[in-house]
Image (cartoon, rainbow, N blue to C red; front, side, top):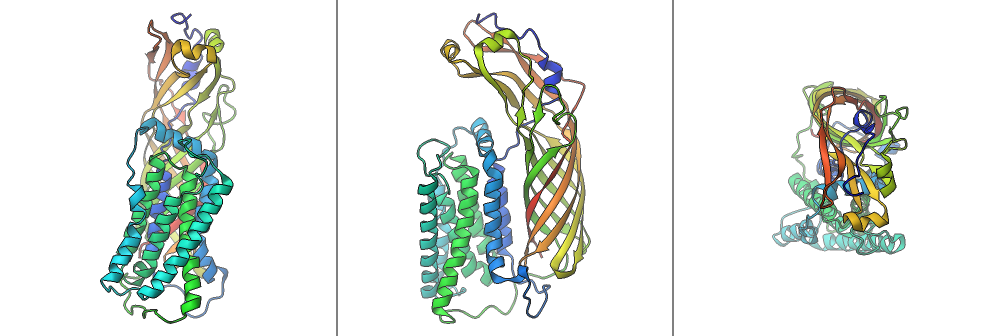
Length: 478
């Protein structure tokens, strides 16, 4: 049977080809999202905001301090259903990554602050007040992280224990980065704030690359770290009042302009609107997908700018009506398809129209190139055949999408919630169509290794047209 197992009915050929895309490299989620927070926290002192008392919801102190952590927690919820898909990308491309720099880098921002205090570099507060603020922040962060860890009991990706959620390393790193930013980044040394959050970014990313945490663990840890610092400093401020507080700097080191240049991270859902990915296809249909992107633009005036975007979309797929040869059905328990996906690198004009009370309408029209990573349709073998073929699964078809031209257009409504920070609700349309190169399983050789045949590249193209909608975090670069 081993040598005679063939795919005699390759209805897979042109039906499957038209339904396939590429795995989206979602491991960038943690890096992109956290780097956005870096920019958002590092900027400050925007004199273009309204002068005088403002009692609106968005100018409320509590809202300002909790918006970014709330978005991080929201991103945790959004990404949670996709955590295994994200981890799968890591396991496919860098399964042997083992560099434990994150065990040490988490403390680097705090060590930087201690060194600056030791050399009498003037910051927000005196060493005593800073120490008390840090102690409160540390106590709150530790209590929350450990309380949730041993209540939720989420298993780690490497199955080593059940204390994965949230990431303690990431929470520690972002708490330390937030403290450094408060003491120096927001006091006249913005690059120190950027550096602190960059080190926290690398720590969180390392936890995922080392297969120790799910992406949601890291996002939640970052939110807990930042929020713990806000609460810790609030408690210290209630104790010290004005004692031990240095006068704010009179000169703003960041130039102010009304040109809304920005960097942004957005996160949301994707819905296919083309037949190739829709639920009306005969053999495959895609569920609602997952979209994330990083973009930025430089504005020549307050209305028009030039910029670009790097966006990723992934669609889980159900091959419910896939027709296989009887020989393959006899040895298999199930068949599954790695997520269909594509990534976009586009550039073009951006538009912004200011409204009253720091609201903005935004738009973009971009064009560029789209591409993806290779993927597989995989056959899971029955238990009695696992030993015979010395494997638990075998790819039935391997595919690789070719690069293609793409274009996008989008609209958004944006609200500035801080001096340099905004949140945005957006919708974006993506358009691209791809040819595929693929290899189909022919059988097994005498040593039980799978044998594949490369099929001609299809002349038809798979359309990946889809509409995305979600929320974004914007950091203005004045």
